[in-house]
Image 1 (cartoon, rainbow, N blue to C red):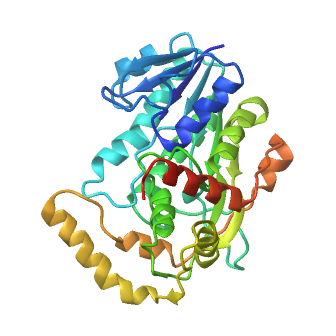
Image 2: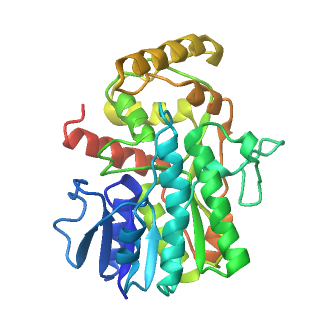
Length: 330
């Protein structure tokens, strides 16, 4: 009953890998040459195959003999100078892997989408799986690529009967965020006392290990063609930063900045990074556009149909801060 997992070098993928090993599942990892193997090199029953989502031959080799596939890999950047590679990996690569798995007779596929594909409710209440959006509504290349990828997965399910269950994590936080992700970088900056101000927005915070368990539950109980939000607690950014302050003993930011004052900074930061040809903007235009919404979500469908549960957001923040500190990120 070997399972293939993509994205095992990443934050969510490594958590899913740990969950599968705990459940006694032999795992095959699809990894690019030179990928960081620290998430699995000490784990039992983990086989590595080198390949890439854009290499059809490697995908056929990766899925051969596997009963299940967990497709977690994605190019996750909120700012990218050249988006074409992101669309190739996240959209074309996803469809190529799904088709390779179907052709190989894989019994069940869990595809990691994102709440980024969902819309926002007019009444301000948390969004659920039925809160639809359009491509025009979606902000930024990462979110657009995930929107298009999920649309292709839905088409495979409803037009070709593909055995794919879709999960939509919200904002995972926790240990082992090595890169770190954009959200992890925010937690790290706050823990290090380098975030003196905030904007009025909100996030749905979930422990990464709960997201990993949600993947395992989706494999067992999810319905093909359905999507399931894997979320946690809805918190304002100010509340998140206040909780991090309580964990570190550093002062909590008290200055709330209007977003409009940050647009010139974002524009200049993006221009500087483009000119240098490397780095990440201090803040991007898309991040500010996203911050116009409180990104709150409702996980009741996953709770009722999968048996999904989540721990309090404070535990996710505590584990993330402790891991960053123990590994000398600040």
